[in-house]
Length: 119
Image 1 (cartoon, rainbow, N blue to C red):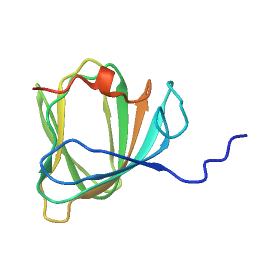
Image 2: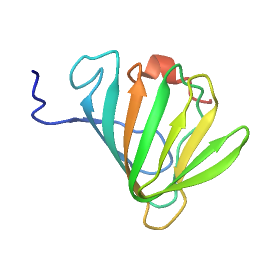
Image 3: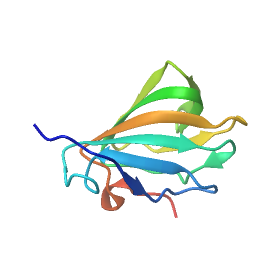
């Protein structure tokens, strides 16, 4: 058993400040297999598009998270989830005034070397 006493605050990409608290992953626990983070993004936040080498599983706790891919745009509301496959271009944003709060799980763990953000 490995208790996690507290998360590590990780710097976020995007046009506005977003809070990322990583509980499990490369930064907080040195785990390369999976990362689990609590995200809080303000209304109007948008990050650069990316083509990651990991799958991302996202559960929205509050608000609405917009997920844009090459095949369309979906708003994922509180109580819903979305899976984004590795190798698929994706851009996340929170277009509504209240922003969003969500849990993101990446497998393998998120890393700056494998996220492949747009320039």
